[in-house]
Amino acid sequence: MRQYAGFGSAASTNQRFHYLLARGQTGLSVAFDLPTQMGYDSDAPEAAGEVGRVGVAIDTLADMKVLCQGLPLDRVTTSMTINAPASLLLLMYQLAAESSGIAGELLGGTIQNDILKEYVARGTYIFPPRPSMRLVTDTLTYCQQHLPRWHPISISGYHIREAGATAPQELAFALSDGIAYVEAALSAGLKLEQFAPQLSFFFNVGNDFFEEVAKFRAARALWFAIMRDRFGARHERSCQLRFHAQTGGATLPAQQPLNNVVRVSLQALAAVLGGAQSLHTNSYDEALALPSEEAATLALRTQQLLAFESGVARVADPLGGSHLVEQLTAQLIEAATELIQEVDVRGGAVAAIEQGFYQEQIQDAAYRHQELVEEGERVIVGVNRFQDEAPVEVPLLKVDPKLERGQRERLARHRQERDQAATDLALEKVENAARGSANLLPVMADALRAGATLGEICNRLRVVFGAYQPRSTG
Image (tube, rainbow, N blue to C red; front, side):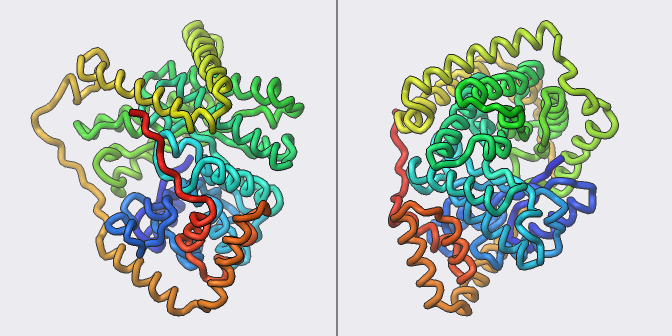
C-alpha cells in the first residue's frame, strides 16, 4: 500500500510522511514540485508561482535531510515521482540516509526515472532523449554497485494513459520503452540477469473493469515473452513483470467529486484482481486540488479495506479461466504486439518518439475519446449524464504562498553559507564529466556534498547536453 505525501516544503512533507506512517502505511510516495522536476531551483525565474504547488520543493541536500528527518528509511520503501533529474534526487536520498547512519545497502524504494514517456505524455523533460538515456543507464549501473535493494526505474504506462492513450497503446508504448531501456543497459555493458530483476513498471487503472484486469495479465505475458525470446533471459525473475498501479486521475472529474470514491474503489479492485504488487489510490478531490487530509485518509482506507477485509488479495489471478477475461487478455496481447512491432519498424522507442509516432497515436485516441463523451456514447456519470444542478462543497487543501517565500529564503542562506570555491570546482567537474563517458553519478554526488544545488548541476548538464525542444505534431 502506498500514498503520496509530497507538497509544499520539505518540512511540511516530512510531517505528512509521519502522519501516514502513524496510520499504518508501509510504503511512502513523494511527488516533487514542477521546478524540481524540470531541474530548476526555487529561486529561478521559471519557478515563480510553482514552488511547492504540486509536490515538495527540493533544491539542496539540506532540503532532502529535512524531508527524511526521523523517518526509518531502512524499514520503509520510498517511491519518488521524478524523471529528468531522478539521479540527483536519488543521490540526495542516499546521502541524507547515510548522514543519519543508514547505509545505502539498506535503502529500498523506486525512482520513476522513465524519461521516454516525458516526451509524449507529461512534458517534464530537460535534455534531449539520447543524453537522457545516458543518465538512466548511469543510474542503473550506480544502483547495482551502491543501492542493491533499490529499483532504479519504474517504466510508466500510467502517464501515457493519462494523456489519452487506449489500453493497448498504454501496454505497447510502456513495454517498447522498457525494451529501449534494456537495450541501452546492455549497450552500457550491464549484465541482463543482474539488472533485469530490478526493473519495474507503473500502470494506470481505468474505468473498464474487466479490460483493466485483462490488461495487467496481458502485460505480464508480453514482458515475459519479450525478456525470454528477444533478450534470452534464462532466470524467471528476469522475466517477471513487477508493477505498481495507480487509479486513473484523468477518470476522476470535478463534477460530483464524491462519486470518485466509488470509481477509485472499483479501479483499485481491478488492480488487485489483475495482480498489482503495489497500489496507490487517488483521492476523490483529484480534479480540484492536492488531497485534503480527509480525502487522503479515505483513499488510504480504501486500500486497507481491500487488503484486510475483502479477502481479494489472498488469491493470485482469481479471474484466470474466465472466458471473458481470457478473451480480453488475448485481444490486448494481439493489439499491443502489433503496436510494438510498428515501434520496432521505426527503429525502436527513442526513434519513434523523435518521429512523433507515439504522440500522434495518443492524440488521435484522446480526440476520439472526447468525441464519444460529447456525443454521449461514452457515459461519464455526473458529467454527460445524471448531472446535478447543486454544486457539492468539499474541503480543499490550499498551499500557503509563504512556503515559496520561505523556500527561497532558505536557498539564499544556503548559497551564502557554503564554500563557493569548492562548489564551483565540483560543478566544473560535473560539466567535464558530462563531456566524457564516465558514470555521472559519483561526480554529481560530490557536487551535492560540496553544496551545489539541483538547478546548478542541471544547468551544467544543459551546457553539454542541450535542452530538448518538442517536435511539432500539428
